[in-house]
Length: 250
Image 1 (cartoon, helix red, strand yellow):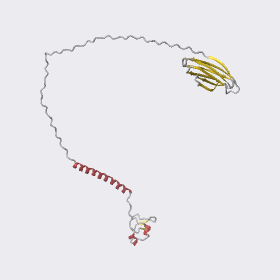
Image 2: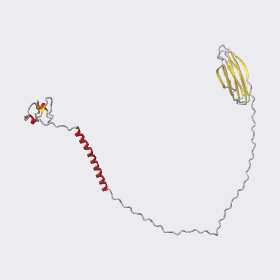
Image 3: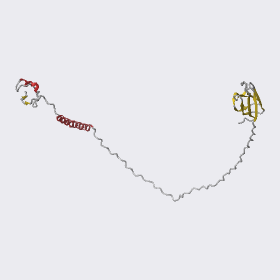
Image 4: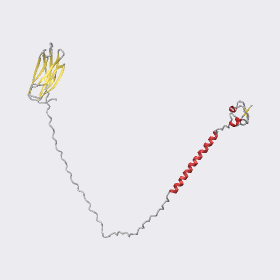
């Protein structure tokens, strides 16, 4: 059994610190009490326990609240002392009305109100409008349509077939269609006006070809059935046509 070199308390063999004074037993060795090592070994100060810390924290919060309350009270006292005193309200003097004699209206018995004359409405006769007869337009006579003429032509290869129509009362219209048979069923189709130009100039049409051309001038109009581009094939052409004079037509 060993003893603490500082306080002389008996120590167990496994103790490293003295439970009474806190001296480290390994540093003090086996020296007995009263030797020189005791003067050098000082007590180990224990750190505050957790309950002591919680007590100090709980005491600090109320202190801060009391300090803040004291500051607010002191500020209120200072503000009240610096505030100017209230001004007493002065009552307003009210004017006392002076009695004014009132005029009393006296009815005059000699004046009798005269009723205004009533206006009598006289009915004025209204004028009756007489319907004016409207002119009925006379319908224009519908011209009798010109019937189509059927013409058949055989146009050899390398040749043209010419057909001439003459217009005496322009304007007129040239209407109808042609049917082409032979080879590729194609043909050139042109219409020359009296001045020499063309109002219709189709280098090649195929199968069935319809036309409706305005004829603006008087004089002869020439139709060209052109098979000049064909090398060996003759074309059979059937032309259904009509020429109308004195009207532009539809």
